[in-house]
Length: 481
Image (cartoon, rainbow, N blue to C red; front, side, top):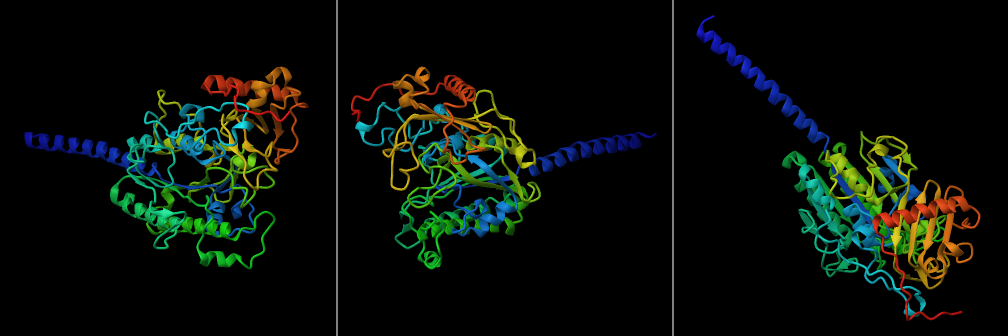
């Protein structure tokens, strides 16, 4: 073989090697990009478990939401991390239970009349400190572009916490601005723009959209053109408010517009859409029956949420998950979707629900926990659903394990003898949710073994997570005895 032929032979071998290696790399890269879906998280404020058609609402009209829900997976036992907005948002965004970030409630922790509070509540933080790694920051190593559009309510700013875009929707008084624009429409406009501007076909990067509506939070305001639809429509049970119904319909239109742009750009098959709410519905305007309670309570109506996941071609249409899930689960789910590993340095309290989205029945979790060491005063519409007429809730911790749920009320536990007087001090309530979804039959004095098991697990969790327990007697309290 001549020197020339040897050179050409070596050249072909090297060229073939380069083509194989870089071709495989390129193929793997494309495959990896396909494994990184876009994530659209649609977050509604104060929308209750029964406020949408796919959960059985008959008065409210949500055809677009229902269509996506029925084309994806409906979660019947999805929970918020708290009964009001700020702590749920903090837990969702940083992936941790409330004792780890200290956002326990909205504004003050000592709500209500001082003379009615037996304990000094735990001080509340209004800010998730910058040492917490939010979802937006965690997704950056996978190349995600992110936007937080709408309600924030966890302190600092979205940009300080890793979002590329923060758009709060300023300039509105309630749900309208001076030009008559409706806030839900305004936020949806910006969400659609973000999707267009960050189309992965152009940018080469996936995106994470956190669309956090102010609707259907008070003030209850809606567009007159939609309210008119409901003026001649017969209400159903406790679902009667025409303006509230119109607000829900505007949210439905928002979901339709977001999905429409995904379809128009050909992004649907590589985009996971999740629909969720931050707490139960406001009891003055709606109710969650057969669930007990609403916004501000740790009974099911205050923390169980409407939820669906939609991802055509990936999630089986018409599927239903009965597995209890909670908002801290979204963080590890999104990490797994992005191909990222959890770090040992930053603790996450949720679990990935990706197995459920793929059709598995369970995530094999032992229990869910809530810790709310603060007070929330009562309001019209909920007084007959709570333990007393003065507060939606007093300081309480909760565990759900299997079908069983236990609530530990700290006033009675700390001041009335705790475990020693458990049969008489009303410190603990126990319910079997499979048999009593309305939490009407307290089994604390009947199911002794189950009560003790749940209570021991809850106290163990409190100790492990260093949950602050209110213990100091309030000097301003006035007993009615």
